[in-house]
Image (cartoon, rainbow, N blue to C red; front, side, top):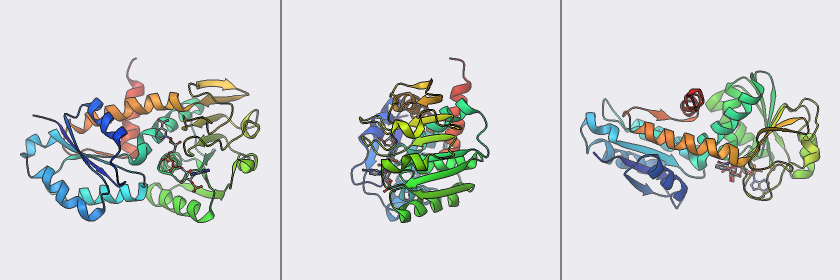
Length: 290
Ligand SMILES: NC(=O)c1ccc[n+]([C@@H]2O[C@H](COP(=O)([O-])OP(=O)(O)OC[C@H]3O[C@@H](n4cnc5c(N)ncnc54)[C@H](OP(=O)(O)O)[C@@H]3O)[C@@H](O)[C@H]2O)c1
């Protein structure tokens, strides 16, 4: 039976990236819809659950993406509400690569330092989908999380989203531009740049040889990189006293994880892959002998 993936994207144009990875992860056909809002979800999901018998429903699955994390969460909730009894399909939420990218970055950073409980994690530009999910994963692991935003309201909004979903200790601070990075980095043990492609937000003098700082990571692969002095291929190398992870090293793990998650969607019909469950998949992948 053909493996069908329903792609529901909150952005106007459904992500081509997500569609390509869906095929590479094992989907035979991807049905892509863009500009999806909560009210659209029930009927689209009914199209999935009423067309194949319960034992065959593992061959149909749903993927939720788009640029807006909160909107993605609402679609996931609406899809789950449309299910009943055995009439359900597996679902994955990965707005803008948020969960897979954040899990990959957090996994590498945590492996580098061990326990993050009580440690200060600074997430630069932590208000986008990737930063929000990374903040949640660190907060859940017991870290003291600080996210930066250029605007106080955006920072508070993101903070509230993270705390409501994951709990833990999260604070938002305002960092209008890179000139404020030195002050923002004070007392950070771990530093992650989750800012947009092609914007340098952390000059080298803010992190190099900073006492107490153990690891820096950047998910921006587009020059100029988000953290000056990192290389996209850095995969745990120590530079100026700090372990470094660049965007392609994180991206390689993200791609493996994203494809593995797509494959898992078609193993059963009741899986929900969101931050925590995607983190479980990452740990299983890391534990596998190479
Ligand atoms: N390596 C990988 O595998 C991988 C995979 C997916 C995504 N990514 C990368 O992950 C990063 C984060 O993605 P995302 O979708 O979460 O990011 P995003 O939403 O595009 O941006 C994150 C935040 O950056 C701030 N920002 C936007 N423009 C800015 C500017 N010109 N100067 C300073 N700050 C600015 C905004 O926060 P405020 O308005 O609150 O300041 C925004 O909420 C991107 O660089 C993306 O390319 C990497």
